[in-house]
Image (cartoon, rainbow, N blue to C red; front, top):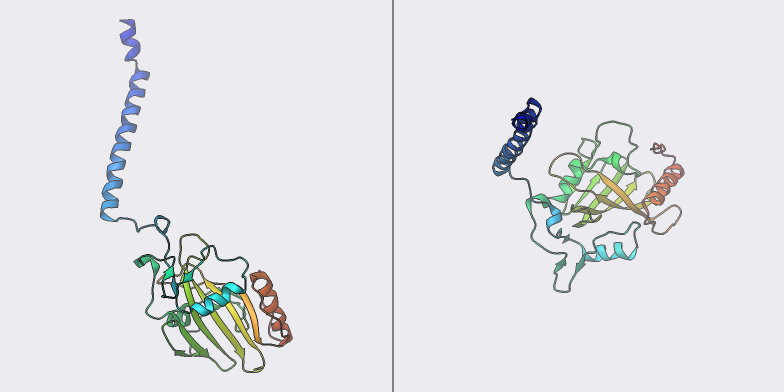
Length: 246
């Protein structure tokens, strides 16, 4: 009798009720989660498959590899003589393929996100080429040429692939810049647009720089930090406003 009272004491009954409540909550929670995911299934993860690559300019991509960028791309892309691109695979909607890469760069590339001769980032909002100051010439799907009263520039998407090995497709972009006040300088920029989406500003990282026609005649600099320092030096030589410090 004492044993029976012990088994069904208020403390024991409270503990038993708590255990049953936890079990029921886990069960019902799992059912609700399954039901919700059945209605709104999550998008497939890149990590479950090789991220496919697209190459629009194989010779330019090979030149980029030969320049030995630092850091080097984690994913090595190759194009066979037959035109087969590796890594291959089926492109998914999450792989975002715009009708015109050039149009996307013209409208959405945030000029504040990478150092250049064209713009000193002094605003909190994204700054793009899509203003009345810039005229645009959309060439093929992958490129565009832009001009304004003081400068001209071009953008060309060379390839799209998982550059950093994080399961997202990035755009490798070759860009040129030239100031009308000093046409002896043509600056070449290697940019990486990371994980571009269908909406919002496009953020670019500076990978390297080269003076195709230059003031100092320096060769290719394929390190982001050193490339930024080179642009700072060129801006000083041209007496342009300095780039802000991070």
